[in-house]
Image (cartoon, rainbow, N blue to C red):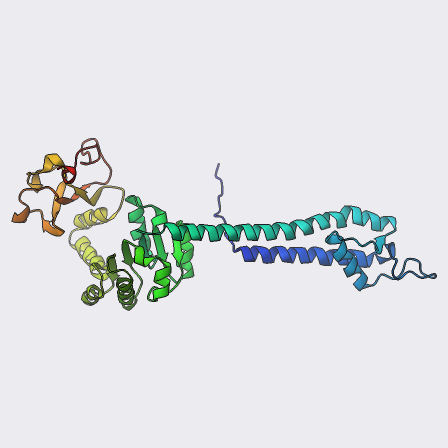
Length: 358
């Protein structure tokens, strides 16, 4: 049996307040009309005369009686005297009075409590923010970057998205991410995102000029952050590096190369796509060197080593400099995305790392 589950509709507390105030106004107007149409059943002691002991109930009197009744003030100068009027008060106006009070008091308390909780959450988030990742631009590339980081162990609370788009705001909130809405080329926006305390910044807006300006601003605010930026055209990559980006990804060239490889060799294109897809098949990963791997050639390891990182410099596995692995090396490998019985992941079974050995 299928069950339909719709996403929750998240509305602004001010929208909720306005909706409830309209409901309260409807109750007020409805009660006024009830009293006014049945005005012959009410007595106004203030207007009573010898000729008319019940007085005259005008529209203003009906409004006055409704407001003091629904607010439970009840001065008693106007009161129901006929049986129909008393029954209407007992079974209609009294429940409306309760609903009116619940709407006003409940809404006020809810808005205050929700606003207070939100302010507390923001204050706590700002206090704990630091050593986080700032993602500038939450389009397709930004979402994929965040998904990769989260799948590799990064907590979503350590990711801050900066994007001016309402669509990006909704998408990021749906992914449980903090969002700073604004233009990332402005210092104030990046300061609110805590760029000065961030470890990494990913810049992936839809325009190369915006990416360059964002990189310049980020580098001014945080000289030590690792900046990864995307550019659409290869000719803009040198400018992006001059702007402060540590790593530049050319999206058009990368996509074009994959298209060309898939055309020349469909199987090679499939393998490349597999390497770029998280969670299944093959993956590219960086790991530390194990103690029992020190002094071994890269080609002899269980993992398929494609590069060795030594003294912050990357060497290809066949480079003579890394013929034998040494303490402190890190390995860039191709391995199964999931640990398999016939291909266990080195470093995941309490093996000693070479970097930890004296």
